[in-house]
Length: 324
Image (cartoon, rainbow, N blue to C red; front, side, top):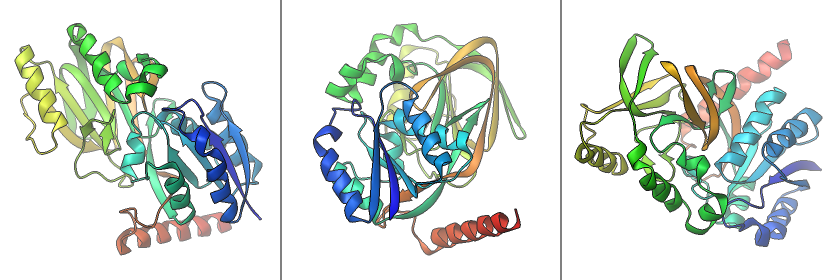
């Protein structure tokens, strides 16, 4: 019998997974899996659990339920293990940015069944100095909102909690002088916000266009210090509305596989919605197709071209394994 390791954060979001736990396990069992379940007890518990499951060699799939932070920990655990095991995700957090990017259903039982009927999709992840992140590394204005907002508040009002927290601290926005090196491009200016991302949205609000999760490039967004509050408001409206043209005087947007951020002071960063590190020298790069996710048949990543690329990637990995 196939084996599945299920890591569940019961505190995530509005605790919705608690009432659906038995149904989810039944769906996995009906699909031919023997299920082992581990509920997280503390920060980084999901990381340790995923690393254990991968290294044990017993499990054909690892599934986690929770928010983006829980999924981040699972991916970190897999990377530490050095073992590739397909990952399933049941989004139960406040915003579920990465779940949106892979079109995971928001209904818990539908998401579980969706995984069981799915296929593999190889996804890029990010490297931030000596750490890994799944979909976004960011600095500057409002980034602290994602990890300073109390969990009980996020449980009640969802991603609106981040907006309210950011509004409270809007008066604390200050410019951060950064030198940014990227391929043949070098930038130096005062910025209030910057991010390197591989996602459809950030904090459930900022929507990005024309992205792919497996192309070896991340999207880089930089916002210069505006002259006044009116300009700041206009920038925010443009970023929240994907149909608006972004003002090039204040916003820079490009793609890259490697970016270095250098400053004269230690600047705090967030990684996938959690506090990452404070550093004056951050190197961010893409780890190409490092994690295999299980996505449903109705995900937009199953065109003939995509499936052929996945097939060729799998064949190459198999041949390399045989040679090793």
